[in-house]
Length: 261
Image (cartoon, rainbow, N blue to C red; front, side, top):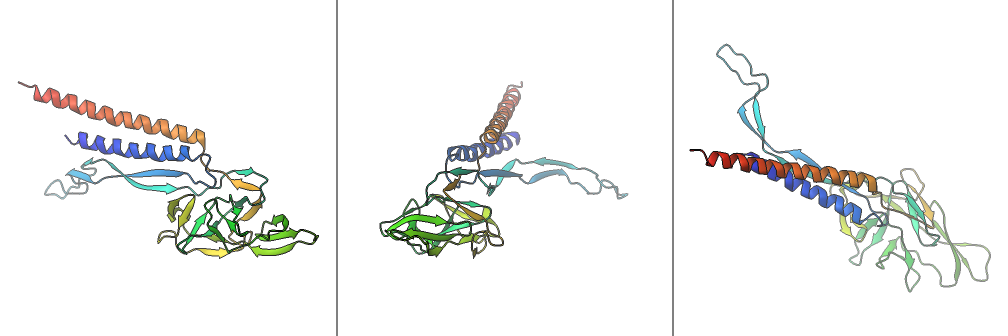
C-alpha cells in the first residue's frame, strides 16, 4: 500500500511546518525579524489510466483518467517582508525603517551584510555600530564631545557639540533595497547577505524614491502575529495527527490482510 509512504511525507511536511512556526514564535521579540511561511507542493502521480489517452479503436478519449498522488514535499520556506510595528525607545541611536530598505553593515571580512534591526550604539572610537560591533555603512563617527545627536527622516546625522549652538553634519545614512528581499540569505544575528535570488542591492538616501524613511528613537519590532501563528500551529498539528491516523488505518488494513485464512 502506497498510503504508508504518502502519509509519512505528510507527517514530515507538517513537522517542518511546526518548526517554522516555532521559530516565528521564538522571535516575536526580535527587532526587525521577518516571519517565515512554509509552502508545499504535491509529488509526482502514478498513472493507472492516463488522462487524454484513447479508450477504443474508434478514438474515444479518457476524460479524467486514474491518477494516484505520491504525497507532498516542501516547496519553499518564504520570508514575509511585511512592515513590523514601531516601538518607541527614546534612544538616540535606535533607528527604525518605515517602508522599504535595509541598513548596510560591514562585516569583519569586509563583505556587506544587511539588516532591518536598527538597535545601534557607538564604539569606543565613536563609530556607529550594531550590537555585535559591526560598522554601519557608510561609516559615521560621533564626536566624543557631542551633547546631542539628531538623525532625520532622510538619514542626515547631525550633532551639537559642547559649547556650540549650531548643529554640525557628521554623515548621511544610506539604505539598500532588493528586487526580491525574500531571496536574501539569512546569517543569523538579524543579518542577511545578498544572493543570486535577491539580486544586487540598490542604494539610496532614506525617504527618496523607492526607499523608506527613518525614525530616530524607534525600533521596528517583529512582524510575527501571535494569533495567526497559534492558528497555524493548530492547523499543522491537526494535519499531522490526521496523517498519523492514516498510517494507523493502513496498518490495521494490512493486519486484516495478513490474518486472512
